[in-house]
Image (tube, rainbow, N blue to C red; front, top):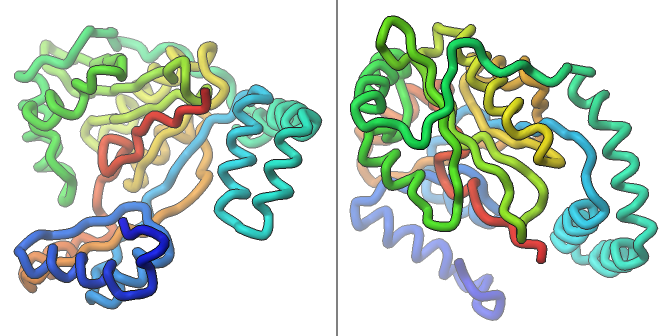
Length: 286
């Protein structure tokens, strides 16, 4: 990140180049236009699209106001109008009403999924089941980031985020895992499906796990979000009433030509979720 008063001097390019030349592989999932220009100038590989999905219910006026301000603040000429519209009280109320009408249409009138059959809620995933599923995922998915017990133990141990977990077991073997979290009191009223893991060939398990997480959150959230790149995982979320809101195109930069070649070879096959990058952040509004 470069402070506003120092932008336009090439500092971002120099920092990026220093990281690359030090032997790091830089993967950027979501980025500002300026960051993409830096990656492109460094000769990045662009991976296949990663989709942000949402199941919209009805936004509260407070959430509608916060989102309105956030979106218009990114466009300088709209900032004043957006803030005035949000402060009026009328704007957020209208947006709240509109979201309640748009939500069912956006979902394609998909009903609330039933809790997935054969799925049990657990207080945490066991390291052994994560390890076994991790090995299976590595064999069935050609390109994904670390999902080892060490990674999952670190990733889902944030002290202020209460993650919920479920698993699906068949013949004594864990065949799928899902993790989600409800919004904190100080956040927007948006729940997050953070991770969904199962053999991509097992479409029924993927759909059941996604439906289970959505059913657990639906009555406690104004909207539910998820992220996915592989078509098998996207299909599971869409069956649970989530629809694509935005698409992102990740970039990879490395000084190692062999690493770049490996990324390029699997460009459209990467498995991304909300557990990657910094998507699963606290969006405080109060």
